[in-house]
Structure formats: structure tokens, C-alpha cells
Image (tube, rainbow, N blue to C red):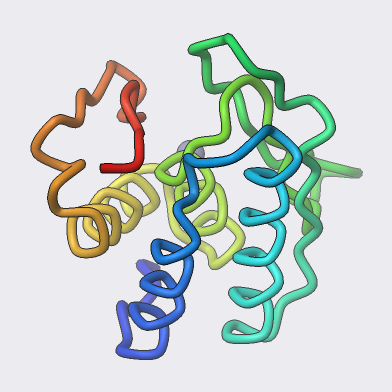
Length: 136
Ligand SMILES: [Zn+2]
């Protein structure tokens, strides 16, 4: 199932945009994602934990994932490599029961609506993730 794109969701993401997600030192940027995660949890009535401890500066890879514990998807997103809005939204979509195709489309559609200027410059690699995300 693809999660609905509601006015509440868009407004929450616009707040996130106003925080300039790609500006600040790594701790600042991680905190912006953690706050976004908390707000999405409130909106979707989830208790997803966002683990950013393996995010580092200076890499360009995205290997974020949701751990599977005992055959069940954990309520946890582990981000590895870069902090990426599209990657994060993609993983969150899986928490909301989206399959791979739906997660990809949801993340890209939201990104396009919230960051239209960035979207023009976006490269989508084979795995469907952004390889360029910067504050305009
Ligand atoms: Zn996926």
C-alpha cells in the first residue's frame, strides 16, 4: 500500500524544509532528521526509531535499511553513509507497508513537491536514490 500524501504530511515536510536539512554540522543535520522522524511518528502513530549513529560526512553512498528481527521488520531505520531525505522517506514508506516500487514513488513524489528546485538537479541512480541533495 502506498501511504497517502495528505496536507498534514506536506505541511510537516515543509517545516522540515524550513530547517534547511542539508545545512549545519553533522550533529545539527542528524537532529533535523530525528525531529522529522518524531513528527512522522506522531502523524502515523508509529514508534519508529531512527539510528543515525552510522552516518558520516564525506561519503556519497546510501545504504540505509530496516533491520529484520525474527522474520519481522523492526520499527527502526538505520541510516548509513549520507543523510538523504529521499532515502529516509523511502525507508519510512516501508514502515508504512509500502513495497519497493511504492516506497520509491512515494519518496520521489514527496521530494518533488517539497523541494522542486532540488528535484530538477536530482540524479536517480539504479537503486532509485538521490545522489545530489543540497540546500538551494
Ligand atoms: Zn526499499
